[in-house]
Image 1 (spheres, rainbow, N blue to C red):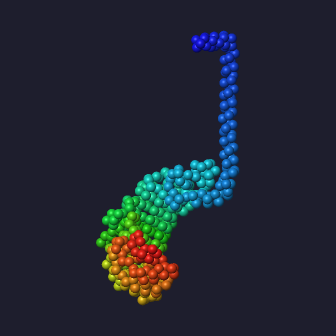
Image 2 (cartoon, one colour; image 1 turned 135 degrees about the horizontal axis):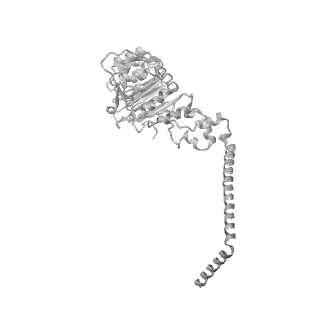
Amino acid sequence: MNHSWAKWVTKRRSALVDKNTNTSVEELQARITELSVDTDGLKQSENVESAAQHRLNAILDPVARLPLELSSEIFFHCIPPRPKPGSRAAPMLLLNVCSAWSDIALSTPMLWATIHLDFPGTKILSVWLERARHCALSISLRKSLDDGVAAVLRQYAKQLKHFESYEQKPNVNSLTSLPCLETLTFGSPLEATSFSSLDYVSLEYILGLLRLTPKLEKCTFLSIFIKVDLGDHKKQTFPNLRVLEFGVAGLENPGGGDNILHHITLPALETLAVRLRDLSDSHFSLFLKRSSPPLRKLVLSGGVKGLQFIRLGEWLRLLPSLVDLEFYTVQSVFIDDLFSALADSSPQLLPNLQSLKIYHHLPTPFSYQKLLRLLSARTQLVCFHLKGFSGYEPRPHADVRDRLRQLVADGIEIYIGSRTQNYISPM
């Protein structure tokens, strides 16, 4: 049966070829041409449809239909605090949505006024800042300050308002004057695990940074210590600096920078965070007298281990404007004297004090009765912390806890205890 079927198919093919060979080829060619034309038309139709859909999307897109001022404001709220170059995050992500969104993003300079760069990227930085046009700039660099990046910074120096540099001892000479800079953060790109692992930089280096920034208002140094040679250095005044902070990335307390205070005058200083390690007590007093700053917040760390209250009281009497006082200590040997002085000398000593925080790393004996007297006398206090990190902090008796909890109910924020437990919190 299969053999018969094969013979019939062969015979039929032969008949078709013999009878209609020419006609069949012509018809097939015509059909192919027709189909080709139809395919081209279909593609053209699809293109027209796609273009029409894009136009319709642009008309119906609520963002594209808004005035540029409003759509730009919406886009601006999409920007993360530290925008990085990359297609998955704004503002570059906005360029990939549609042509309408791309046009809005490229027409909004403030979207490009902030950048965080963690690799040497001269080209991307240049393109990014060009899109920012004449906006004030905020730039953060992490191990990316090479000669090319420095050249771009010099080009936009007059627009730079906020600058962070986490470099391994970058060359300050690679920069230029930053006449409009208001905030500067400078430090090591590595987190410090101990004070011995911090970077040491020279006093001349730090003063060079400050001289580049005549309008600087806030300066933060992270994970560095400032070393001073034995030569005599002329004291320099920085009249606009309101905040000077020395911190340690990875550690809980500020650190470094003590001895720079012997060489500068800061008449506008409102916040100071410093580790009193090398600076002598008398030098700190001279700095306060020389600057006579309207200081509102003072954070002292490390070097107050052996500090006696007679010296501390001298400093505090020079700061009548102080509102916020913090200590990070090894052991707060002065604590009872401080409580008594604040309770008994009100309002002569720190008349504006509202927050007192003490953090210590060794068990620190103190009198709860003196603390209660302080909290009762200083009715303007809104915050008191006494936190230890040894795990052996003394717990108050039940009657003391009850009185402290009543003060909390009256509106004072109180934390007394260990790193993880506030003994005053209800059980």
